[in-house]
Length: 340
Image (cartoon, rainbow, N blue to C red; front, top):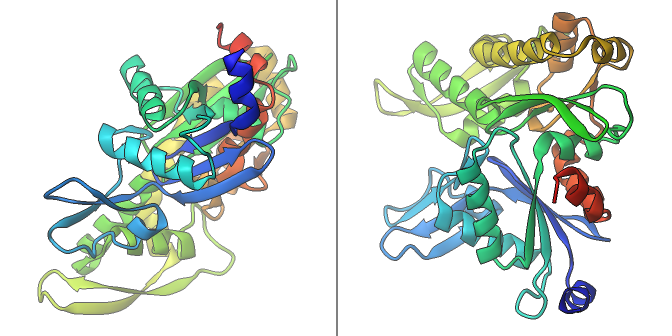
């Protein structure tokens, strides 16, 4: 009876707890929050100073007594206390009166995480104010979010390129036939760009500049018209500020190893796919979701490597969060498929 009463006064919440960004979906309202997974806190007291967008602005710019950090690494919790504070902030900001009616929460998690990591996510959400927590594998959430008919007896394949992980899953009859993830994603691309700039130009750049380069001129295959941009950083030899121009071709070379890892993951999944389901994929192809799906020509590169059609989701950044929202409408389906 209490559960029914609580249900009337709380908003059920779906959370895409990502390495780079966290999205919150509130039942009947849609995605109400989309912010970086960054927390700034005081070194001496541990008090949280800022969360999300405000904290990201502080990355690389904080005074010595404040540190801006990402509590998620490779899709899992690296700092339990900071993740809990971040989750509490996001749930409250999403408009839930936690003191009166704690929400039921679905959290999307990488399919390859360990039981210890699953427990950490669940406990963080409970401590942040959730009444009840269910975990949903990210590939399932993304598949539902892009509108794939995963309950049918046909192959549905999705490649989710996130900040910390890239996951590929082949789904049929609401179950995962094959899934594999690698801890390679957007963050690894940023690191590759930072290392390239240091190696090629002795230029030290920060995370934010590297991400800016990736978004503005990053590509996985040659472009019809190559792009250039101005990059600012610090000369590691002279120690002085420095500005230079780089091309999309250079950044493509810098990203080559990371992109190859993603291509190999996809090919490996297709090699492990049962023949009947492989036949389905010849015509249907597969979906590309996650922030990495926005890298120019990644779909073309993967299509050339596999010989299959590749469809980029309409809103790849929101696919997982939208999937948690759809599942919120039908929690019984989740409980049934998860064996509860």
